Length: 186
Image (cartoon, rainbow, N blue to C red; front, top):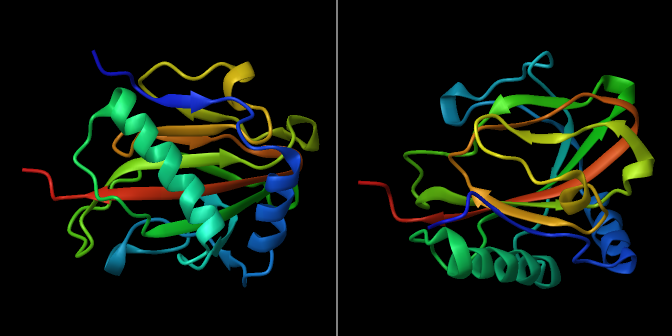
């Protein structure tokens, strides 16, 4: 039987998380939107966060994401995927602007690069750096707080599963999100 997701609690140490955060903050921030292509728009009631698109050729980050995605896929998820990372999104949820992302899925159909099959989320903040900001699935079991709230924890799941990030009520939560694509669904 397949698992819903795979998680590695505190898989990355503080030094590596600091390096990723420092690197991510070098990029120009954008207000996050919802939708794709012609349907892309800002909706701050639905999604309120700052994002930065990290250069896909940052090998030290790209290799980490690919390692966890392929390991999760091999051991539990069994998706038809490509063996490369196409996007890396450094995300900031801040209490100053009520950072959140309501229920959504990450599937992007009709892309020339194939469809998003696996989502990878790396928790980059300590749980005591912020309040709220809880990652939750809508219709499948969630990882426990011990499994995914710790800094450096990595979660990999099929992109089609609906999920959300609750409002950050104090402090700032940083995460790195990426997707592994695969051939179009039939």
